[in-house]
Image (cartoon, rainbow, N blue to C red; front, side):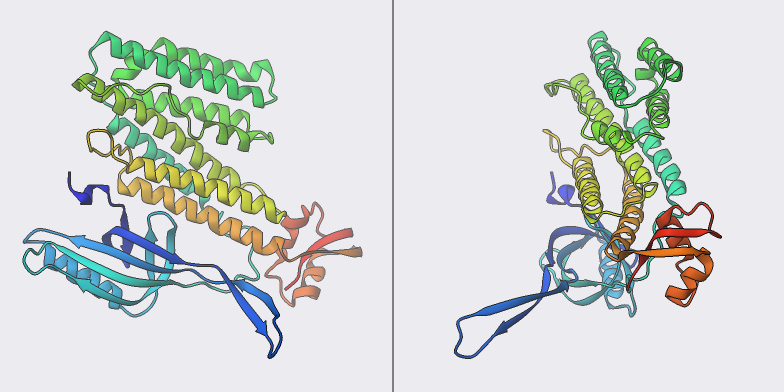
Length: 407
């Protein structure tokens, strides 16, 4: 097994490379006040420092590709202007490369080792529309879910011919359906609304052997059942809890890896786990952009929770099994799609946080929303933001306490 097999992939200005080490400088800006002949110090916080990345990345190739790949990365780092930087954990951002060095062993070419400083670029964050980051999230969700479904179909080993393996996977799918039934206890719906969902579960269990030997049908069956339960919870406060219940779903007991059939069994078991985890994550991404947040603590908790789930999913997808092989369900394109959706949601939460810090309540005595917004901001750029913030039903008749954003 090569050391390269365990490295995550990154990208700068469209050029791929392998991450060996990533160091992130971050923190707070401080003004430290000290005075002559006094043993005292006061510290004033001036906001957050913006992160700076110090990276060690490699590019590799054979006799035909090495020099071209090495040169492409050098050109990418030297190109003027902002570039798109893809970090395997922190996601996609606009950035510029400050300086870099290239180290190579002259005795044996094939690996160019770059040490580079990457400085992310940030735009002014006020004012931000409440809808920032959510405009195309539904389409991204649809595209990402389709890629996840296809990845599961491709990965699932469909050549199991042993009865004990069939029984084992029957138990795994039963555990999955039981978990769904338990999750339904979080949702307040009528028995008639639950009937179609339970029928779908029974069909999945009854056709378990056919599903196991047909990876595409199994993927579609699980996806259909998962969509049904999410649709039932769409109008309840329990939806977020439901999603988090499923993330880190795991069937019990790892199989001993000592025969080809058991290797396939263990690979399939982990594929089911990762498949359900990924569905939970992208559904929670979509759910987040359909939720309006006004409390700073709620926004930070949701952001931390999503980042933790995303990091776990990416790390598990590229981890190595007991034989030194990757437990990889998703190709880089699918991971990039999940990452892009994560970035869209992050932008939405950042906009929500920016606005939450600037919310003030004013008293309005009968006014129309249009002149009110123009009165405070000198333009109508924030009209939709203020309307959404206050859940305005009739914009021509505004009275009472109204939330606005202050700069």
